[in-house]
Structures are given as C-alpha cells and as structure tokens.
Image 1 (cartoon, rainbow, N blue to C red):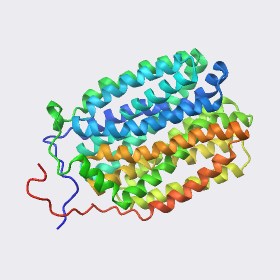
Image 2 (cartoon, rainbow, N blue to C red):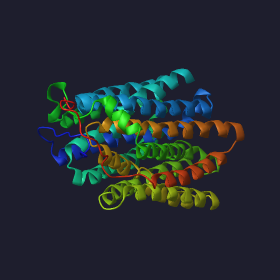
Image 3 (cartoon, rainbow, N blue to C red):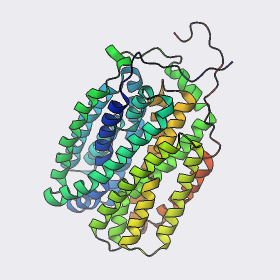
Image 4 (tube, rainbow, N blue to C red):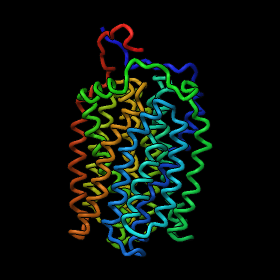
Length: 414
C-alpha cells in the first residue's frame, strides 16, 4: 500500500493573485539587489586597497551562509509560516547592506556582506516564498506559479542592476548601499499579505511526518541526491558569471556600461526563461528540462569563449545565458513538491539550495583565487563547462513520481 506525499491542507487558502503579486515583489527586491553585487567589486577593492580575493571571499561566504541559514529559515517557515521569517530577513538585509557600506576591513566586510546578508537572503528569497506557493497554490498550477515567482526575481535583476549602476555613479558606492538598505525594508509590508491562514497563532497544521522522518526519507532517496548534485553546478555557474563577468569584461578593454547592460540583459531574458521553464514543467518531464538547461549552458559558454569578444558578442551571450540563468529553479522545486509533498517543502528546498550555495561559494571564490594566481579567469570558465555536462547527466535518472510510503502505524501521524 502507498500513500501520497505528506498530507497538508490548510483550513483556508490565500488567493492566487495575492500570493503571486506579493511573493513576486519580495523576490524582485531581494534578488534584484543581490544580482548587482558584482558592480561593487572594483569600486570597493580600488578605494579600500583590497584584493579581488578579499571581495570574492566575502561574497562566497554570503552564498554559503545563504544556503546554510536557508535550511533553518525553511524549517521556521514550515513551522510558523513565512510571515515572521520574511520580517526578520528584511531587517537583516537592511543591516547587512549598511554594514557592507561601512566595513573598514576585509574581515568586517566578510561578516556584513557575507554572513549577515547571506542570512537575510535565506529569509527573503526562493525557499521561503516557494513554501507559500507550494502550500497555497493547487498542484495543477504549482510549476507555473513557481515560474512566475522566478521570473519576478529575474525581472528584479533587469530592473535593479541598471539602477544600482546609476546609484554608484551618481552617489558613490557607499551611499548606494545605504539607499538599497532602506529599499529592502519594503519587504516588511509586503510580507503582511503572505500571512497564511493555516498558521494562525504561530502553529502549523498537523503533518504525517516529523522533521526527522522527512529528512531521513529525502536523503535516502537517490533522486533527491541527484537534484542536489545538479543544483551545486547551477550555483557555481551563475554566481561566478554574475560576480566576475564585469571584471572579466573590463580586463578585456570593455567599458563598465557593457557589464551593466550585460547583467541587465541576463535578468530580462531570464524572465522569459524562468516563466517558460515553469510553464513547460506542467507538460514535460522536469528532468529533461533540467538536463537541457545545464548542457545548453556549457555549449553557450564554449561559443562565448571561442568567439571574438565585442559588446555585441557579450549581449548575445547574456541574452542566451539569461534564458538559462535561473530557469532551473521552477522545475527543481516543482519536482521536490511532486516527490515529497508540500508539508516540509521549505525545509527540503533549503537543503537542496544549500547544495546550490556550496557551488556558489566555489564559483565566486575560485574566480577570485585563480585570477589572483594566474591573472586570468580561463580555468574557471573551463570548470564551468565541464560541470554543466556533469549536471545534465545526473538529472536524467531523476524519478519524478510521488514517493511511495508504506502504511503508517495507528496514531503515528499525531
């Protein structure tokens, strides 16, 4: 006998429009700000006399902290609802951006830009918002809804990166960070509209599984392990490109405006890619979508490195890579919900995302280390290509059907 994954039916639901509008706005702000951090690499290192490795290490810690704290943010969101987690994350984000602006040493910069902002992102991005979507949106529209939220994060990159470049040029890099610190506090009023009725009084509805049972089941399931491996590669590739491409382009004689436009184009075309991935996930096997995305990234990087480097080649690369950028997010999270159910979705999504962030740590840190050692980013580009092929292969065997569970003992659900 088998049962469907973790029964979880809140007594009432938020409207689909309310969840998508407010969730998308929160992701737009949170992801939009963090996508532009690469624009601060040269202004900060040049004025403060730090190395690129110093800056890269802080952002590597940020990505690692984001993944680690994301696990606990997911647990808290599953237990108490997303509202409280979003409030705390917004406050930490504002404090972290202010600390990033005022850090006098690389160590303090690592604590603020790294640990503090990493913890803030854990409470204000996909794992928490996708938990609300998973619980509040019917299964037949869930993949599409996740695509909408991911597209909002991409639109945030398109919208915010040029704004951040304008703030740096118009007010200086320190004032720009302080302005952004005030802007992220808008997450707090938006979070009011994501107070889930199933969590009234700070208690979650009853679940079939405890946290321990859910974790043992997931980590013992091969498809969960394969999804984590693929997501590691996703983090490595996108964070290396997002942080180091502005400097890579400037090293090759292109203007800072080219880098700003390139990051904005990635964000714009990722709106298309993430929405399409979410919509296609309702009709096609998600493992095939993921395998295609990872393999296509490797092909695009090879062509980019092979072709002459001009502003036009950068923009074409950015557009194509943008379609593939965060389009892994909706199918990966939709597969998790499809296999394990939504009762512990924020927590399980947090663990998978932690793997993504370990990859992010390696991508951004190795970019700085190998550049300082060799004066070139070539080795990291080659690693990104090889990892893309690896991720395409490991996603193909993923089983998407709901996990089968044996009959439970009487009273076990209680």
